Length: 438
Image (cartoon, rainbow, N blue to C red; front, side, top):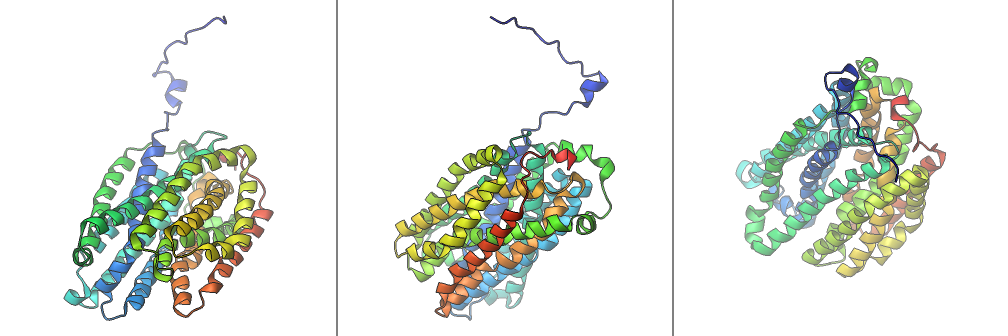
């Protein structure tokens, strides 16, 4: 046997020992819990869109009320770039932990406002205006959350494990979406249709506000990113302007990465169950369960995709995603039938294909920017692209369907996926880059 040696206990008073960073693994579950709650709040709006519409837009037909509700959903996306710019700059100047606590506080506040805002019949035009305000606040929070969470996870990840650790971003995002979906199922099973329309739909937002405060408490206790602390001498006064001035190529590359990614996600992961109910007449409860099972499969596969991106690089997985949706988007829509089984099959294939990008893209984009402007680097360009091509996807597909033009939407998704594929082809591999040396 090899001889064993016992290391002496560390002397905490020694200068070199005192400077040694503390373990930061606790930051991943803390950040993930907060992210899950953020996306629970954000996607609860989509899960209950059919019920929210008549409350705030009672004079419209059911289809028009849904369109009005989805338009407010898109308005929330329009505020994501503002939130990404402000919270991203806040993150680069004051820390990742401070940005994470701010974003979850804004999201819970927006959820509380949705939960307590009276109906149009009680306060008139003020009701939809307050709904818009709530979604604007949540949009700012969502934009800031994406940048702060992604930056934090990648900066605390060990070398060679950023892809695996980044899988926690979409795992927690999907778990939050699953929570809102399961709560929708539970409420439909336990409440009468009248109760659900009158007040039941407000419960998810009230719970989101309450749990958001718990996430805020947890995030205040998280350790700061060691990379951010080490980069203190390099911080700049206006990170967003520094990004535009010194990193324009990387900024446009983030836009290219995001165009197809966001259209695919908000089509196949967020809105497809609602679309199946509205156009294919899949029963609501069956559609929700099909979505749950498909998303569970996606969550289980994400760590594997993360490990593959660490072993073989970001670029191969990104190309599989881009080429796959460029070719398969029309076929996936064609396979969507009147049964929940077809919805499950389409969502499962789409989400597994999307997983190639979800595990690789966050790290790939962040690896393009130095620590001093990392949050700002992806924040504004990413969120602006999501607002233009992700937030509008549910509205566009509903609008086209109402006019008998739904067949064109899959080709629109294919076109956007092709744009991202071009960006992936031109991307130079960064999986092995040292973030501190960027």
